[in-house]
Length: 182
Image (cartoon, rainbow, N blue to C red):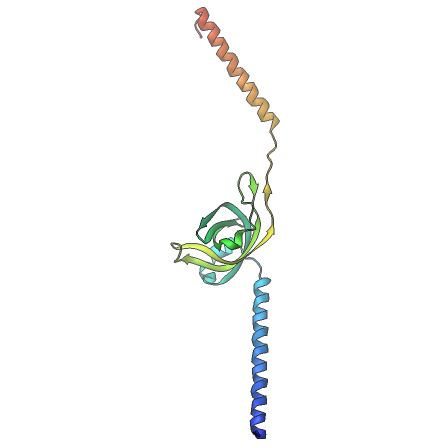
């Protein structure tokens, strides 16, 4: 079958338009991906202060994982502290396999960057402020904190122990002799 020149020209225009839409959509998705990848982390103070503005939006948040990781089925709760405040993070357990250290008295927690949806008042979690995580990037590993022995405190404690022990011996000696203590 032979197509007319006008039909052929229409198909070329449609193909050109389709190429334009595919390329522009691809570029828009790439730009959105770059915006998420290079977004500056927002502070907990800003999130709390401007919670209404960020509600339901994707945010990047960075801080130290502190406390316990609380597994709840296929998901878990993390507490991430940026130095000012800690925010609850709801995350799929598959994403936390690299987190080895959580901040406590004995450990410095892993430093992570969280990207996810911020909720000012999460209906799913009883109205709490939280972030539902899409991705976690571990920035640096935590470590154990070694506590140096305080020699002055040790000497003071030993001296106090010896003083109490000597007072006990004195009391015992006086009670056997029948001498009143005071």
